[in-house]
Image (tube, rainbow, N blue to C red; front, top):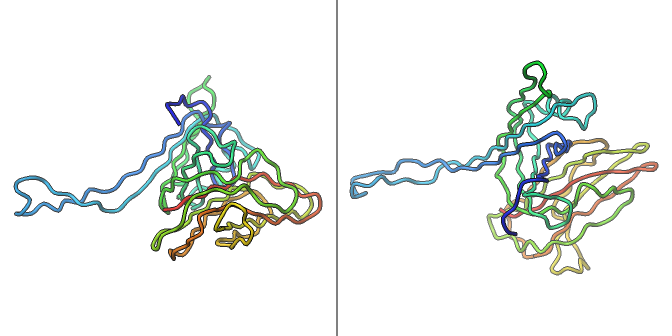
Length: 245
């Protein structure tokens, strides 16, 4: 992936797709530098890495009166913790680069001077580590029946590392619709005998979840999202991202 002009950054906040309401998204990560200077440091300052943190800020045009709109989503999320996922410049395909984390929606700002397009801005601060991974399910594909996604070769999970997974349910339609998503692993891309590693709580409306494995070693190298859908004429739009950290 070479140099890129930011024209299609996708931003998913819990159960909302902020893409059409955002014109600026910034993601940052840092590690505290703790002073460890001593008499053996030979006159040079010596530092050690302390606590890590990440922050995502976004801003754009304000809209309201629908769960998918930025005002409804921001108001309901304020002070809460949920998944945030952003793309490098796209999320249309399985395997596109994703950055995601569990984060606290810490602030929400809106409105401006007379004559201006009503703006908004907000910040989410990491509650879980910032993960660099790949999208396992794109937002534009509606699912109406039980199925499985495309496999990703994300590699094995070493002891002490975890597989992280985000799920953003953007819309749910039908009578008593229900979506239960899970993360499966396999020794190869055939998924002949997949193992379920994570299972999300059943979703019946828009919303988001983030999960991670327990930190035990997993030798399987292929991963995918799978889902069970029930209800009368159900239809779901959802996004999922996977990554090892």
